[in-house]
Amino acid sequence: MTPPGAATNGKATAAHTHTSELLRFATAGSVDDGKSTLIGRLLFDSKQVFADQLAHVEAVSERRGDGYVNLALLTDGLRAEREQGITIDVAYRYFATPKRKFIIADTPGHEQYTRNMVTGASTADLSLVLIDARKGVIEQSKRHAYIASLLGIPHLVVCVNKMDLVGWDEEVFEQIVEDFADVSAPLGLRDVTFIPISALLGDNVVERSEEMPWYQGPTLLHHLEHVHIASDRNFADVRFPVQWVIRPQSLEHPDYRGYAGRVAGGVLRPGDEVVVLPGGRRTRIAAIDDHERALGEACPPMSVTVRLADDLDVGRGDVLCRPEDAPEPTRRLEADVCWMADAPLRPRGRYALKHTTRSARAVVDAIEHRVDVHSLRPEPNPAELALNDIGRVHLGTSERLVADPYARNRTTGSFILIDEATNDTVGAGMIVATG
Amino acid sequence: MLSFRDDFGQWDPKAQRPELWSLYNGRIRQGEHVRVFPLSNWTELDVWRYIAEERLEVPTIYFAHEREVFERDGMLYAHSPYVELVDGEEPFEATVRYRTVGDMTCTGGVRSRATSLREVVAEIAATRITERGETRADDRVTEAAMEDRKREGYF
Image: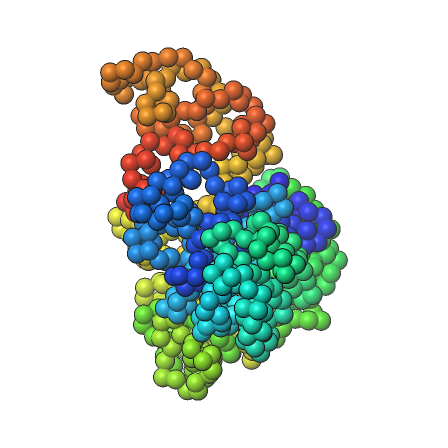
């Protein structure tokens, strides 16, 4: 048994196996499309709701005069959220079935919460988009699909909700499938699954619907339990950002010198040749350790300690790569940035930048375009990026970074920008090109 | 996972820093501090399975033991000099354990026969009542008691 987020090092010998136990998925939806009800239904029907929680929801439903047990109340965690009747920030919910553990990153869907959606999407394996069957594909559905593609979420599920309100009509569903394909195809979304549901009544959420015999696909929970995520990470290009140098210099381990970190790409094995970037010195992997023993290999997202054959000057922020597919260290980044602060991003703006385990300073050379969140079309040469804007930015950095395009690697392709005066995280960056 | 506190230890739920990918921003100014909750997504069952798997030592109060208790609002509290009994409340012996360890005046024990890690895991796996609902009296006061205490810097 492996608790979520626990050090899974070495527990699994075969590559990939331990990543498939946990599925993180992001949901975004507007106030009325039934998102909270859907999550409440998932929790309730998969028996994740405790007796006292249900009693509480029943009592509150009655006090509010809802007229039914309002499962949406199960998901409304924080007080500010309850008082406003909307979802704020990113709310993380946890549930498990015998097949998998799940972490839901739940965000509001309105454009003023773009930064929250981007935050929730950054760690998601799967994005769940809700469409009201009566309204069809609306601007917001397109924006959610766009964010899923921008953040490189490998799998998308479109739940066509409120099928009970359109007479369980197959044609309504098929029309939405067709309309959505026009949106998702240009975005390059590879894996899109459509499921007709009624969150309120529970159809096709956990239990199969008896009202829609024409739908032969999986229920939502079945899909979440079985979607193949083990090969989503990059297992091709070796990337090992060093987090910490372990040098106990103790009597027991007088000469131990290891580099601890989390594998960001590829498979590392003892004996492999590696290049330490950005410096460029080459050596071989002498051994790979976890907290109790030596390992034959390490792959993403394992946390391990690597020992090298030669005594090189290696520190936090350096990245071990395989020479054949190592990136050229760079001080120039072209990236899509989602802006998260009230004070806008402007050309010549200076920020602290955090990329893998390295911190540097960055200056904005130019803003190439800003994406209109309504039409999703780029507008060239904007004066600034305001709160919740997404745009293409060119940056110069104070240090050489060992970076990849985000589409190639979500770990070595991402960075955050920090306001040096307030220390707030103000931008999320996805690298498009380096150099 | 990271929670920022001002000079007074207060938490502002509206000013939570976004946590993107695994890129944590732990920068603070003088006087501020950050609290890290690496296990915040573990359930009670996760915690006990981990304790059992690693055979960690835990205080005996987490296992079933004989204790003099009294019943109030459906919960069993330890009989102690710090709590005054009101009419109708009578102390009695019961076999209980604690699912959470807190102030004895407002933390209830639960009836239990679990004396080993294996039995505790089995008991929690089968329970239909949350740890907060079963043992935390202060959480019953308002719907958001935990949130209020976090804002005040309680944890």
